[in-house]
Length: 304
Image 1 (cartoon, rainbow, N blue to C red):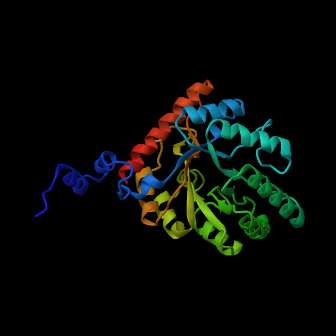
Image 2 (cartoon, rainbow, N blue to C red):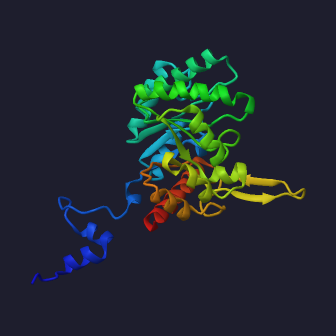
Image 3 (cartoon, rainbow, N blue to C red):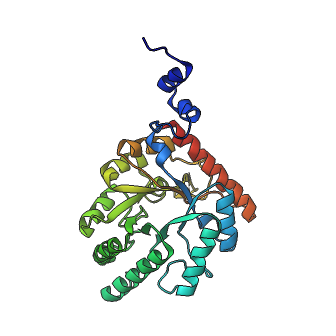
């Protein structure tokens, strides 16, 4: 009969503790799929300060990944007007902090004629390739009269990005990407396997007031990333909704645990990118808030 040692007991009954006790060379299954999800942070909370301060803040808050979400007057990121010199310096700044950049946002110019809009989007994708991103993110289209043009641009962009090793994704953002019905329509209209979804539970509440868990179900197989933000909703004297997303996680209506459990059930494998926190009076105060949201997510992910 095999003797049940203390280590065997721990391995069999407490997987998380057993992983910590085993030597690095030992073979052990991961505690859960959640442990595989990298947690990063976008630059949005720090746009009042320089990008150097932004990167320092993201690093100090504990993140290992960052994304180029919100351009500023001094930092176009991978916009079509970005110069090769700027892109090289941008890449170097990020690497100097030991950070990895995994995403850039595309500003799709549906106000242009179709050929010009396609060319501009392709240029942004090429710039993303230069910086070394894995994902290029779009926000959908707000104006119904431009939906069809947007779908055509995305169909071209999906193929163009795939050739360059970049995954094209769209996030819920109102209008033609408001909630699951609109998102399913967009997926069908674009009609390319390299067009996926980065889910945003906070934006589902912000733009539509719908349940983010229920809205996730019809699009679950298409979700390859998650934009993390909470959303509070107040009502003014006239009864108008006043949603707010620049808040701390747990202060709003997003049930992060329920959303992550649903994602896990669909085989989701990250990344999770923090988009928002409460903006402080200083960059350091904002960094502290971003750190708190990181810690919040770590606790939630450990529980699902």
